[in-house]
Length: 278
Image (cartoon, rainbow, N blue to C red; front, side, top):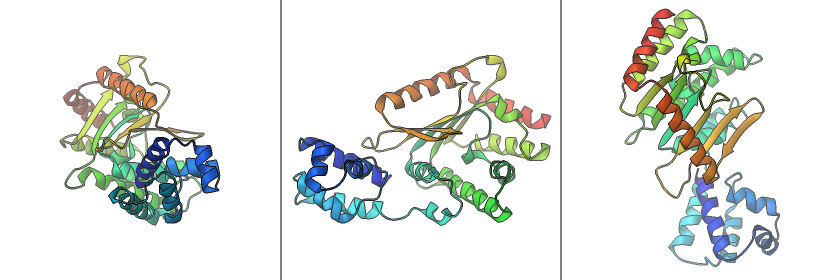
């Protein structure tokens, strides 16, 4: 997240200096790709590189320069999730890093319970299927990663605000057996009592809707300088959509899903009734 914030500022400064990425790369004697990856937060920047960029963009002294250099120092530090590097799926560290800095997540789940709402038994059963070649200890590490992420919902002083829309299929798909499913649904209904957690169910009888094609998560931040991100998970890899038009479209889509779903009280009753059926 800090790399992303730094990149936004460096891009703004480059554009204010009237330089294209290609022109900046020529002056700095580096590749266009390197400048692009730094500006998009996809790589750690050396302090030497940030100093050179600030010099080129005319930020040679003052509080702004020092603040950006300090931001880069912080951006180079490893997040808590680096302790799970041995099991962290490729590319997923980006999502975990964004999630850790987010103020609010709006997620639509089509098939399984979102990770932040999963009980340990449910997560364990799901991860065993998703990682069939993993050793038992690796599966337990993945479960620990998931439960550690869930601490965001109790983060002080500002817990992560979560709004989830669940397709009814999430409640009906058996994961881990009847006891696991019943426990998962009851736990989810209990979480819905928190002021910062909103869970709505989109039942089958509502028919076709705007997002039958798959799940997505809209990640929003408290600082207006940090634009939102849309995370789309798929079999071919994970996508992070950041263009303002893409973020707006995701917000509109999520709003339609919310409007089509049961309200919060109806959803809680629906979830508890589904738990009884298991």
